[in-house]
Amino acid sequence: MSTQQDIRLLSKEEIETRLSALGEPKFRAKQVLEWLWKKGALSFDEMTNLSKPLREKLSTEFVFNPVLEDVVQKSNDGTVKLAMRLHDNRIIEGVMIPEDDRATACVSSQVGCTLSCSFCATGFLKRERNLSTAEIYDQVTLLNRHAARSNNGRGLTNIVYMGMGEPLLNYDNVMQSIRILTSPDGLNMAAKRITVSTSGIERGIRKMADEGVKFNLAFSLHAPTNEKREKIMDINRSNKLEDVIAALNYFYQKTGNKITFEYILFDHFNDSLEDAENLAKLYKQVPAFINLIDYNNVEGVTLKRAKPGRRDAFLNYLKNKNIEAKVRRSRGDDIDAACGQLANKH
Ligand code: SAH
Ligand code: SF4
Image 1 (tube, helix red, strand yellow):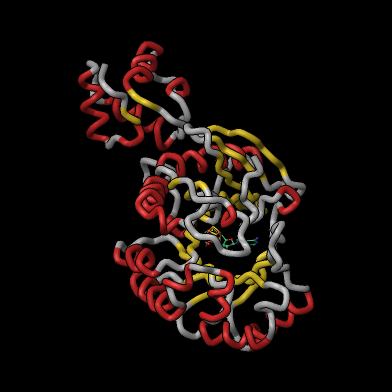
Image 2: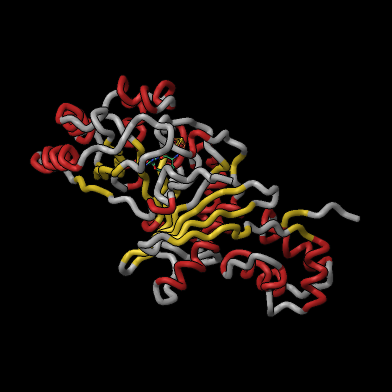
């Protein structure tokens, strides 16, 4: 018996060749491909316009490893958190956040994370492996099904790579997943509705810029000087702020997309007016928006969410300097679904 191949690792041409070897007409490959990506099938059995014998043949010829929904949690605010099981029994998490006329999926790019930022629940997990393109895509498919139930069948309107893992350390699979999500053969989603968040990997940022990507980039800044940032993010030791800022400028030049600076406010760590002043200095160096983020307290972390008074003073300082800044409220924190709380308790 020939060794089975994962059907979703095959190109269109390879699938055509394999199906014609099975005696299938040419249009069959198109039907199968449509199920695999555009229609987001999660098994051969869901491919209902194929005959049963063909579906059986496909399942003996190919491997199909879907991501499966494991545990569903619903927050009071409508946010849905999914724990999803991979074929090797590892668990990842993704979140669907409904808002008036939109629904955003937050997806993971790795099992665990390569890095270990001191404030992040995912950072406490050991990195086990990268997710494949199909595994990233399946999270979107599953979250899309929940979105369709919550916003009148409209489904997902936005996707953010802000779940578990550092997307730019799983570069190829993340880029390929976005290519399919934005392709007419996939979800046909506008690239402008996709955001990749990075802790600041200079090389990856430059590579994306060179590829002329169209999606948005968010940079997890969280502290406005190298000295302070190194205390909470190890990645800053090898990727210094000035080098990352230069790479972000390069990204802006190539794509025309402003960068989103994400800045978690930590009580008496980075929430003083002096910090705001340093942040304002960085802001001047690259076209950006600033998102101030309410920290979701994580068990075992001494850093805590900034007090509302200090947060407002910080925001006002920036506003008075005409800086584009806003506070991003946390969603789904009653079920630990908020960013950085994605650390499965299994
Ligand atoms: N690894 C990437 C993407 C995943 S983290 C990155 O670091 O950017 C997504 C965002 O959630 C990042 O900005 C991250 O710093 C932030 N985050 C992590 N832990 C958090 C927490 N407990 N509360 C709020 N935001 C958190
Ligand atoms: Fe990884 Fe991002 Fe969490 Fe840092 S903040 S540990 S890079 S997921």
